[in-house]
Length: 307
Image 1 (cartoon, one colour):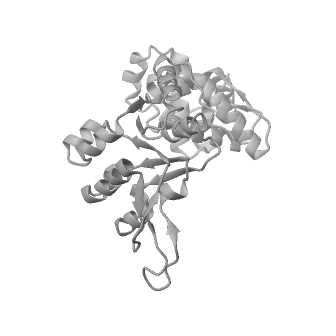
Image 2 (cartoon, helix red, strand yellow):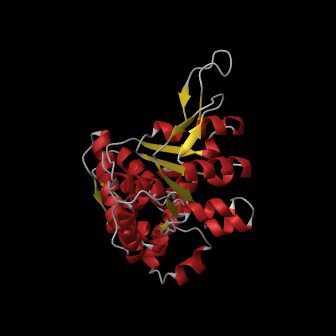
């Protein structure tokens, strides 16, 4: 399935344009951006628009591999290097003429980074326990959550490796900087989630859309996708702001937050109602007692707030 990148934010469109320019080349690409902003998806997009889209696309996270196995994962292992060990190609060899998307490069020691640097410069890899060099042709896309210069200055990334990698650099903005894309992204994720769950797509209330647009999204696009998945799983004909966690409502002191966002009195009442409902675990009878209103009045308030 081809990577689908959605967005009309200028910074996002500029990143996508640079990715398109880099795709036909074989040079390394650096993708920077906070966690969950779509670095892996953009790497796949570059691969699919490159010279060998049908070749393998291998994702490899250095942070998820024990340090004792990092070199064998990079270079591969020859048969017979130890009892019971079978022949295994390294990640670059296994990718053929495709792409290796490598994250957590700064987790490698400087000596392990030197091995990667040598592989990139010579286009060869010598398997652990082997005595011959194997040609490797895969392209490297390296992803970082921090700017590479910061990693170099903090002695987490070799400067020579940084210079070798920094041919094309694509920077993805966090989701809170591209709020105009939230409705289209959410709509796409909600439809996809409903299709996977074999459920009809629910109607979305305007207040829910406003809450999504106002949220800071520390988990970025990945968090938005998970929220759409959760709403789809409810199986409702319509979803409203009452279906969101309380963190989408009033994270700070109520009056100060209300003044900052110039809320109407009805909006403040609705938010306080949702906060109380969240505090009591969704138990409407208990929430009604807390608020000093009848259960029927609570239902009417919730129904009004979802419109």
